[in-house]
Image 1 (cartoon, rainbow, N blue to C red):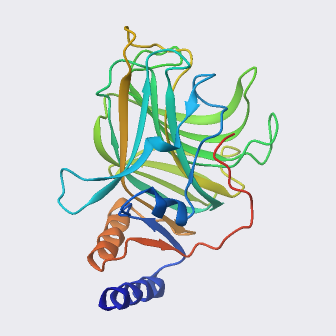
Image 2 (tube, one colour):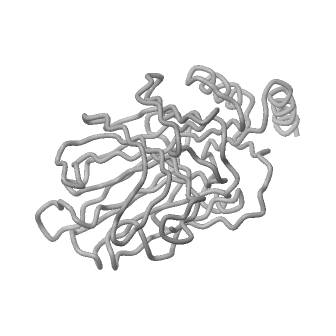
Length: 291
């Protein structure tokens, strides 16, 4: 009872000083808590990734944080042997109700499995209804630890989308590529406001996008761990496993916050024992975990 009262007081204090918030500390004992909180664990075939592979909801788990006693993490586990039947990819997404404001997550990128063309992501997206859908919107962090898409160098993308056609591929977007290896923990932060999208890695601004490459329709916050169908793939028939961990995810509706401000709010929520906040108004729109 005392813990519930403390959590209620914490929410009241935050509400007095901020707008609508979405926050998940991923501290559930298992994925049943994720589903109850509105997270969808993808099980539908389709774009992106390897055609004929499986999107595996059992690849999503909640695990103990070996680096911080008492903390728990969201884990996305994907694996491949370089063939479609031997590949399982992972994705989960929230309700479609997010647009302007600040998006942030503390994410651990992992490349221990091998040399496969892997994409580990944190993003928000609107379903693509048809080719060149004018309402399609997406803001996308993508880490390619082993390269891909005709570039062998490892890099982290920040991409602001306008629209796209999947087949044959033709896209309209702005993309920043930060070259290097980013294995380990990072805070990824994106500000969407006043017709601009600003991208920050660990508090450092990487890029600013605008014009038509700015989200205009409500999106679903999502994470995924998948493989580029064109490769390259590591040699050998054995399965290689890759894990992406998420410590927390945060969205402040219609507010532009720095990483320091987000970290302060996350720390305050944790201090008060608040593991989850969601007072962003529901949209009534269908939430999907595929394109």
